[in-house]
Amino acid sequence: MRESHFAIVDIETTGSYAAANQITEIAIFIFDGKKIIDEYVTLINPMSPIPFHIQTLTGITDEMVQDAPTFKDVAENIYQMLRGRIFVAHNVHFDYSFILAGLKNEGYDWKAQRLCTVRLARKIFPGFPSYSLGKICQSLNIPLSDRHRAFGDAKATVELFRQIYERDEEQYIAKAVSAKAKEQRLPTHIPSELFESLPSSTGIYIFRNSSSKIIYVGKAVNIKKRVISHFSGNNQGERRQKFINEIADIEFQESGTELMALMMECNLIKKHWPIYNRALKKYEPKFGLLSYEDQNGYLRLSICQIRKGVYPVYYFNTVHESTQFLMKLIDTYNLDYRLCSFFDNGKQPKERVEPVLKENLPDVESYNERMNNALNHLDQFKRSFLIVDKGRNREEKSYVYFKDNKVHAVGFVANDLEISNIEDVIVQENLVHSNYYMNNLADSYALRYPNLVLTI
Figure 1 (cartoon, rainbow, N blue to C red):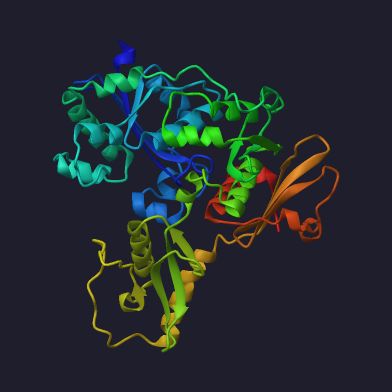
Figure 2 (tube, rainbow, N blue to C red):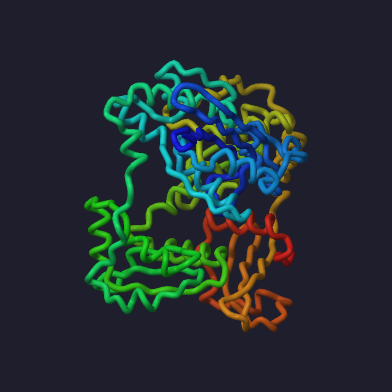
């Protein structure tokens, strides 16, 4: 039967979360438990620039996807491949969230049962030092070529799943597929009138405890539906039950658009850091590229770990990304390895270059000119603009003020107000606690919807 088939999937994207990024490549292998019976692989034009560090990581460039089909062009093919099949991926939520968002945007009503090869591998092969795709393939002697490309990673995941499938004596796969959420239950300690008062519009919701302290902030396309979903399901874990029991009051703020909801959610979390908001922290970059002048007058570049008071010129999520990025800059602009520092926390990355004797350094003036060209390359996308969209009602409109590559303010103004100088419109309550996640959201949204953008 079609339902017994597994769709094993891998994608490459422009970033790490589906709300503000797009798919650049997809590979789907249909597996019947013994062999591959069908496959689909294609590059996808994301309709926005691929960040430089993503290009160096995956090898997928803007030129490669320029003539590729858009997601809209291939949505029907993807839907037909996945329809009625069990969705399998390594870290399944990542791949599933992007494809779910993409198909939803194109009008496809698709959901699938999911299996995560990371979770299954932990049960079938306990005790491995790491369950990343690269490490577990090495532990199981699974060939892995074209790393960080959809075809290569998906093909390796097929073999990993085949080994899991063959060794699944405890029927973990069957249990995961047959698991169903329990009937929705609303807590008795929260008045039913509170749930009934919630709107079905887009916005944010706020959970407070009995002391009126904010313990959780969330965003939703449908506030009522999302709030109620917190109290449904079969997770009886101690943390979840404690969370539900602590909720004493529920507030909401409508936003008009999903982008505004994301901005409002992020700003409140950064301002209050509620105890049960953890997911947002994983979107913060961990490493950065610093630029500074040494005592001899040379402009230098250094990879560092992000910490308070450090303001890099570029951000990265992994040491590998930062190393590849800096090496690309060095090669492109003929920089001197001796004047560039790679991150080292006591465990040198494989890409770490061999030390070079510090003699015969280049002329300071000519070298700094090359370095400035490299830094200008990083600044070429630095922009200031407004995103103006619909408001919470017909009488108003929303705005996101992106100033010098950072979200500076978000708010609402009268629909008939002509924004000639945004600085005159902003009040203190509109200013936000900007961060990497918010900046990426705004920048990606502006690239995706240029008709909503006013350049400043």
